[in-house]
Amino acid sequence: MATSAAAAPVPGGPPSDAQPIASSQPGEVSREARPGVLRLLWDIVIGIVNTCLRYRVTGLAAEAAFFALLSLPPLVLGLIASLGYFADVVGPETVDRVTATIIDLSRTVFTDDSVRDTVIPTLIEVQDARSEIISIGFLIALWSGSRALNVYVDTITIMYGLGGRRGIIRTRALSFTLYVVALVLGVIGLPLVLAGPGLVADLIPDSLSVLAALYWPVVILVSVAFLTTLYHLSVPVRTAWLADLPGAALALLIWILGGIALRATLEAAIGGSSLYGPLTAPIAVLLWLYVTALAVLIGAALNAEIDKRFPAPATWRARRARAERARRGLLDVQPGTSALSVERAGGTVEATDLGDNSVAAPDRDG
Image (cartoon, rainbow, N blue to C red; front, side, top):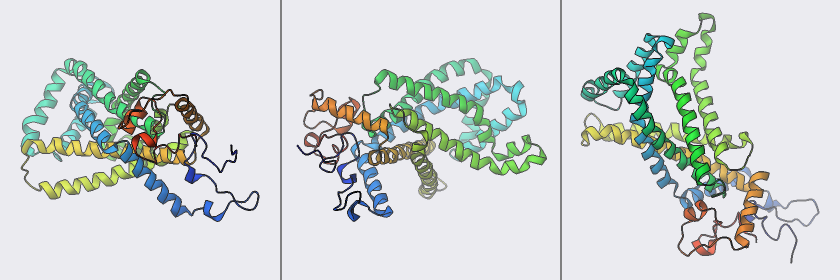
């Protein structure tokens, strides 16, 4: 049996086409093994597309968007209701300013009649019955919101070829914890985000007014840090936090560009009147959440593709262990089984069973 590293890909490592090609001179890599940067970027793009198609990223993004939309109304009402309890701390002016900002933002997706007849009375009613709204609203938001995050965590794990390693209970517990942390950060940062840089300029001294110009850069950095942490914690083995920065940056870029394109499309399609009537606003919010989920999953696909080509030691060992499981017959893949179902169950996808030669490359023994 040949023992050369060039004869077969390393189990759990990068695909065989990413392995160095032997040269005629010792210690030298042939010209074919040194593709240019553009070729490498193109291969990564193709890998991202294949990953997204293989694991139904568009469908999973729709699932995450639905549960996120389901959690929004009780979450927003619960946050507004809980904000009233902190009126003595942050001041009634801040509460009024946040409420006014929410009303102004509502006018961007609702008609003036809907804002006057529905949004404003609802905000007033929420402030009159805060305890009931908080208890019921947060329970619904915790379930549906953590379910949306579970889609992210589960899919990211599968993209790395490590599906089933963490287990269902631990995955749901991680999703719930991440959502609770996001809620806490939302309660703290929501007033500042909604109020905008104007509130920050009012809070800081005049001598430090230059800091107000850092408002949006700080928001962008915090968003990238949150996405990077989500990617980092979703991988069931520990990797470097900085290794997930490329996916976070790409996700934020796609989200910004997608939001701009979505807004322009809705304005052109809907214009001054809409055939959908009262469904216009929910459709717009659902599409925005879909773009958000799609951006997060595409960013995760980028990180997974980079890790397949330049694997971290922990992910390399984990994928090699899964290849050992498959070789020992611990995996039974039935013909016609989808790649996503096999990976979610903790198995290794085989190309002969699924009809996709690109699937098995990272996990095959060669």
